[in-house]
Image (cartoon, rainbow, N blue to C red):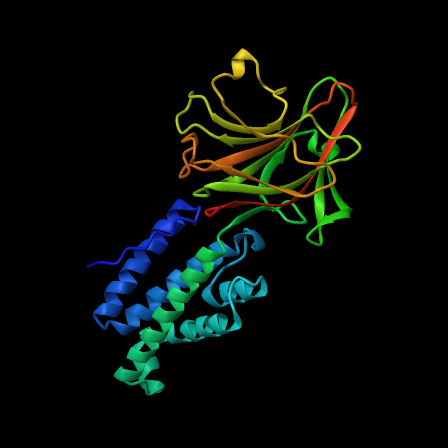
Length: 312
């Protein structure tokens, strides 16, 4: 039976389809002792997965090959040294596709078979490691979303606070000033965050100027031109934001009370529970919105480690 593996965490559709195709072909070649092809295809799968896992660390004009991808993945603790060393061996073994290289190095057929087995084992190890580390970090000491744009207010409302850390890392302070409107910090991703069922965030409302309402808004562009985009809104605290009639078409769910001030509270959002978002289409925008206490001139929270994840 043909073995199929879905690399659901790879956001790039074309790259994901290529990796899935090469993985399937590698399984066929291995089962039929087509050893050179097995090594080439395993190397291709590894290269694609490691590039995707380290995509944020590459510039657009850099060439990415297996050795470079393995080195970058090891540098950022995606893979272990043993896996990195195996990847470098596979990079050299792929040259055995040339007949003269095999005869010059006196590589026997049995030796090719053993190398193909090692390549396949390394590929499976990379699959497991990368899948386990496939959480999409939104913030952990720095904004990790590769964004096209921020709302014009973000420079004023967002700051990195090193004085009140979370798990040893700086936190994101979101602060709104003025009484005329609620503040919303918009962050747009240049590629949709797909196949992540949960959003988890550690938050701590300010003790001096806590908000009356904390809302996360998740945006999903419509696949059809002229159709309405989708919004998934979840909030804690009083129902003060976007409760007008023209907002009725947008999903909106109360999750609980405002978290306690001066404490770190873990908040979790399950996108699939209410069947609102298409997880394959993905989320391409997120807003952090704070409702104002009528007696206060400002409101603020701090955001610690926050990520999109496939597991609760």
